[in-house]
Image 1 (cartoon, rainbow, N blue to C red):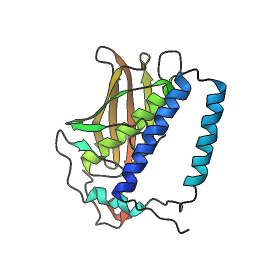
Image 2: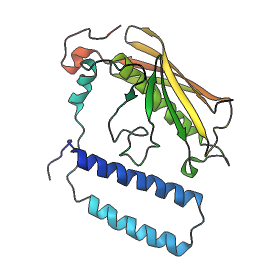
Image 3: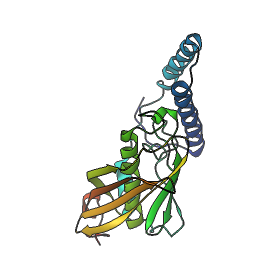
Image 4: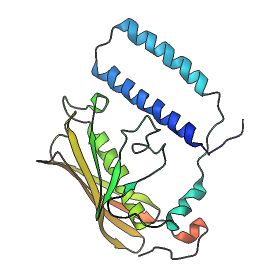
Length: 220
């Protein structure tokens, strides 16, 4: 079968439902002591489903969509920031994610989430790599408020306290400064009373002409 990148709305909705189920399966497996027989039976069913899903054509993401960021209107304060349904962490159709629901609260982009058993590192707290991944993905949403595309050049995370499981945690990020194509973003995570972690990210903006657009768009 030929590679394809397009999904219709019904297919996206079905993928989001399946991704939700897989995430729930992850937390159920890690967070509960299921009998061995039940675990083996579940593995048998999942392996069968994997074989069924592999019969479809391989997907190839369209790089041309990156140019759209420079042409779309900037989001308004209070707007929900949308992304690819299969983006790692934020995409609802990606079972690898958490996922994140990100809102623009100018000048911040912000998400509130509850981390479950599958993300546990030390007992009762999230694995530090998960926290870093949240910062990595969330800081990228700042780019959509600027209407630009950029790649991560550096991400530095500071852990101040354990990020707890099963309680709401708010993560937010904003542009700190920019120098030409260099975008400096700052971020933080808090449970409402304690600052749990902070981060600084450096992004390198992709010049609009490299995406087939007029030069100098939204260079700031």
